Image (cartoon, rainbow, N blue to C red; front, side):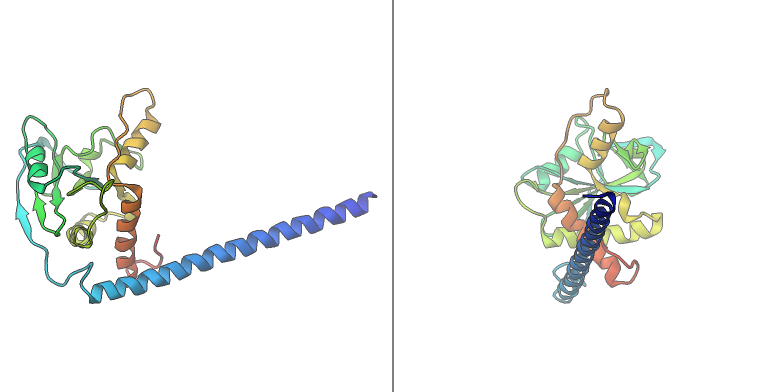
Length: 234
C-alpha cells in the first residue's frame, strides 16, 4: 500500500468520524429540544391545573430563630437547598431554633407547601457551614437557606413544596439578581469547599438528592422559559 492510498484512507476515516460526530450532536440537540418542548407543555398544563404554580398564595407563618449572626448582613448572592431529614416539621423547627444546636435557616417548607419563615433574607443564618459557591467562601454570609421538610433519600419533594419554594424565591431572585447558576444544594457547596481545601475537614453531607435538585431546577427554569425571561432551559 503506497503513501497516497494511506492518505486517502486517513482522509475518509477522518471525514466519517466528523460526519458521525455531527450526526450525534444533531441527535443530542434534537432530543434536548424535544425534552424542552415536552417540559414546557407539561408545565403549562401544570400551571392550568394549579399543581405547581398555584394561583392562591401558600400559607406563610413567621417562626423566628434566635440563631443568626447579629454582626453581619447577608450579601444574598445565591440560594442553598436542603432537606431537614426530620420526620415532622415541628421537630425541624425545634432543631433550627434551638440555642444549643446553633443551626438555622431562612425558611422551612412543609410537604403541604406551608412556609415557616425563620429569618429575613438580609439575615445571616447558620445553614451552610464550610462551603463555597462559585468561588465565594462562607456561604452563610451570601446565600439564602431553604429547608424542605422531609428526607429526599426516602421520599421526593411534593408538588406543593416545589411550587411554594418557587413562589418564595421569585421576588428574592428579582430583588437580589440571583442567577439560576447560584441555586445549589448543600452537598454541592460542601464538595466545592472540599475540592478547594482538601486538607481541611469538611465531612461529606448528603442533603437534597441530585435527582430532586434537578427536578426542582427544571421546574424553576421552565417557569422562566414560559414567562419568556430566558430563552433556554437546563
